[in-house]
Image 1 (cartoon, rainbow, N blue to C red):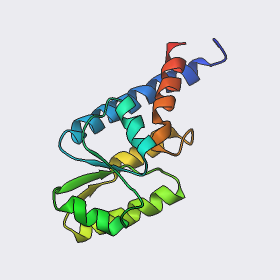
Image 2 (cartoon, helix red, strand yellow):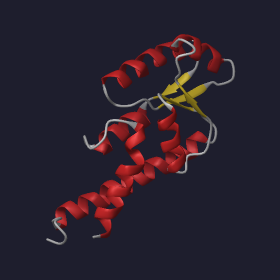
Image 3 (cartoon, rainbow, N blue to C red):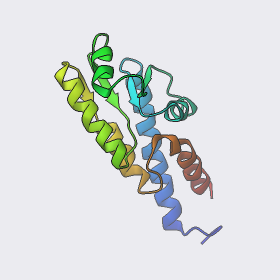
Image 4 (cartoon, rainbow, N blue to C red):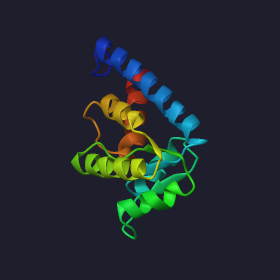
Length: 142
């Protein structure tokens, strides 16, 4: 054991980091053509910190979720839902998914699901992704 981490922990951190970085790279590639929907401005900032530079819409209180879906559907045929993976985020994701489907917009929820799985309970929101990636990088270097 080195620096408080066993070889197994370091190996799993390296593997987890690799999978996380590949998924974030895939998200960035997809975001070149497909907008991402997040819950808050800090989520959008977190994506920017991770190098994701495409269109990101933030859920806000000015419109209902269905109004937001209607507005976005005028310009988009597909969206990536990246709400937090807590209970509230799940509810928002479900509502948005229904709203976009009603407006003929294809919805990608797989990335959200995979990020939730990869975060393994360490975080439950998009805002925490940069810190998690940094922690995994630190563990992988040891």
